[in-house]
Every structure is written in structure tokens, then in C-alpha cells.
Length: 124
Image 1: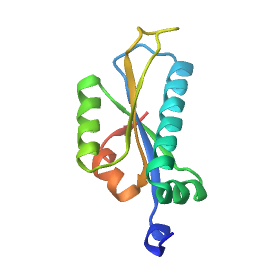
Image 2: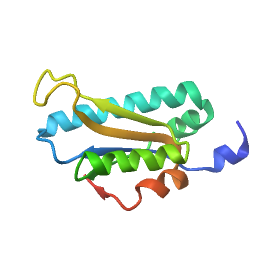
Image 3: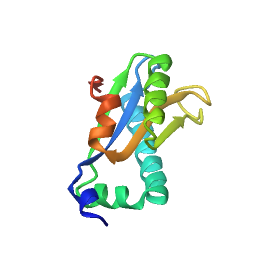
Image 4: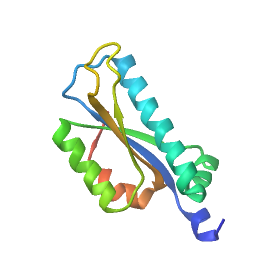
């Protein structure tokens, strides 16, 4: 791994929609889905990013948006920066209809890139 990669901070940010009625446990499960999916995606596609993030403690931040439109705008901005993005759609077995998009995960990726998209969002 290059020294440049080792010197970077890495994090993963999960963005949750607040316009759908999910209980605390449901939100936690959806965020966990995004975290695992994102980690697996980066592990397969950008192994050096994954390794640096994992070795440093797997930093994660959970933030919120008002609705699906804001969520898709954040996703679009992340994709325009070529950041790894995952989207969680619920299977509909408990509180919300099948196929409902609940959250988006960005990263793990260099913090300075992720911040360009998520820094202005409020913590969940």
C-alpha cells in the first residue's frame, strides 16, 4: 500500500431518509445493511481504501435527509465524484412496503472526498 493512501483518513457515511415511518430498530437494521454492503463493495473494488479504513477503526457517520429527493441528490453528487455508493431497499417484511429506498451508503472512502458531499448534512 502506498504511503499516500496510509496518510489519508477514511470513513463511511450512511444517509437515512426521515420521511418514512421506521422505528429505531428498523433504522439501525437499514444502516447496518448499508454499512456491510458498502464495506463489501469497497473491499472488492478498492482494496487499499478498505484496508486503510478497516485498520483505522472503521469510522462511520450516520446523517439524515428529509426525503427521497434529497437522498437521490446526495447519491448523484457522490457518484459524480466516483465514490462508492450503495442503496438499501427494504424487503417489506415488517414496517414499510417492499422496495422502499431507506438509505444510501457512501464509502468507505477518503474523508476529504466524502465530506464534499455529506459535510452539510445533519447527524441522525
